[in-house]
View 1: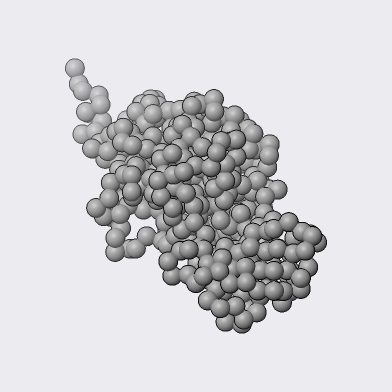
View 2 (view 1 turned 30 degrees about the vertical axis):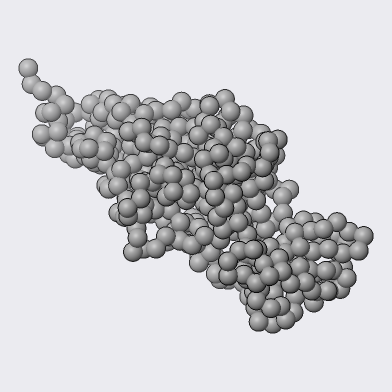
Length: 461
């Protein structure tokens, strides 16, 4: 029995049921996240979890199929045990479901500790300022929107865009650039069996599985498992980071499926809906996940998050990306136009932003001129995009010479720096590609590059 919880209590008959939810009246000391066992005559035993502990009504989410379950004849046991998960270095290389049970045919891991699933966000007073970066191997992220340890940097995708392929690419290529202990925790939420097979094939072929822990929740799995999967994964990530001292990157795909499960359960509970039918507490719920990333004072490790979400109808004002943007420190936006043109990963660097980038780049962390380099690429690429739109109206011959150069630069930028296919690029190679693009322009077009930086790269004589 977990500390702080009462002993097991048994109740005969439930007040009612709606879909996967069971309602109990007058329970004693029910606790949020408490495990529940449900039995009925002639039916297999089912597991559940307390998702709302009230004075009058306690709501239990049943994890298995509820077909044939009669609430009046059900025997419900509140076990007095909080939902917990096995964590430890032994899980590296393992494939588990959203509840932490094996999916790889191996025995249940013994682990090094048992941690509650419902962990708390990091205490702001204990947080250390994020610094140093994580190399993802993706040029558009490492060079233009650098990911910093302890950061939450979501990817905003759209229906049909290769978000899961980008997630697999990041899982394969992410590194701590100075060789510090590093691990990836991936959690798939509501992905299809086909997506699972494709993802696993890539991870196996790349050899990244040995330093990764994979939690895979599929569309056929219970709804409640979608809500628990990211918390199970974060419990493992926090142990590896703050107990073992590793730098851990947590990749979550797809947060939209998580929010849809949240809405489904809120509807079954007949709660008053908020924007577009999502529960009003969705902001708080998402913050409870995102704010578990960070760096803790006095600890060696860190937890960094890349949540990936699909924007319904490509609408960045939809509640899911809107609330995510309020909580996190920037966003990586995928472009449908770049995807149609065969650019992978189709990252649109102009609306993308890493608010902590300056904390993770510079002389000792990346290269001294990284900030100037990125600013100049942004400036010329922006001018080239504007020139491309103007050329559609007045024709390319109607553009000024500098605009024509910028338009050519924009095309090369997308095809040579953003587009990289399935290969992994170290940051040094990304920086070299960017310089090669910039050096194709006359010096007078490069107003963001200081004279000292230019002379250091191009010594006279």
